Amino acid sequence: MHILGIETSCDETAAAVVRRDAAGRGEILSNVVLSQTQDHAPYGGVVPEIAARAHIDHLDRLVAQAMKQAGLSFAELDGVAATAGPGLLGGLLVGLTTAKAIALGHGKPLLAVNHLEGHALTARLLGQVEFPYLLLLISGGHTQFQIVAGVGRYHRLGSTIDDALGEAFDKVAKLVGLGYPGGPQVEAFARRGNPQRFAFPRPLKGRKDCNFSFSGLKTAVREAVKGLGVLSEQDVADVCASFEAAVADTMADRLAMAAQAFRAAHPDVARPPLIVAGGVAANQKLKAVFEDAAARHGLALIVPPARLCTDNAAMIAWAGAERLILGLTDDLGVAARARWPLDQAQAPVYGAGKLGAKA
Image (cartoon, rainbow, N blue to C red):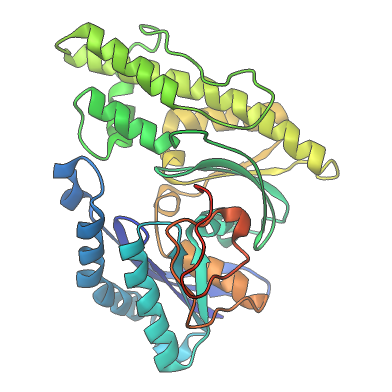
């Protein structure tokens, strides 16, 4: 089957076409992504109105480009998938409405995809990964462990109780005067810094659950920066390195708890896959932590390439394909959802919809 995917949940406008063969293998035929980073950089973060208008300006062209690269006509598609949530509501409406129009106009099934499910299922696009597996989702808006038991079947082991990890990176970047997006810049400065100069806390380390907390760590960074006064370039590097070291230690501890929880739930899985997804998965220091934790706890680590860790439409198309094969299609009345916990990814919402807890 061939699925067109559309992603407009935040500040990337994206369209892609994915093929799924009879054996369940995936192939990306096209994957076009337009980043809006330069549009939002002057404001230090994503401005929802600017993002929505940019999606309107560019989406039709990107869909046409994705279809052309795939060498397909709309008539040759088997379905149209679009992110329906969670995300910025204005952007979601642009993408979902476009998908509805294409589906209606060409008589194709509509697939309203949970953005987080797109990340959760990406590993299956890349290879034969069997359920169940352990998912660590780390991005600008989400930090959580999930047991992925099947399409639409998720069990949350733990999540952040305050800031998401990507959000913490962005806030630390702002505190030391770096630009947006902060994650890559903090990582770059950290390579030149002393990770032992500042003794930042390791939030929740040793606690017998799978939750995260980064608000206190962010506060500790703010107090350290305030005490330094005017920051030199070395000060910035040392703060970044010390912050990244604290995050790495915290992640190693949280992964140990999650591995233990997964094995308790699925003792029959000999070498459980550990899938790390989301934009922060591209951080190289953290990737080394994931590799060490996987070896230590007998997990099979899979980290998708950076282009599939950040927001893209190929993952949405693939999630749509996975849902279509199970007959999980959606009515044209399905609504966009600003909040949509992954635990509820199976259930479509019509009309006004209901707001879930912070995903």
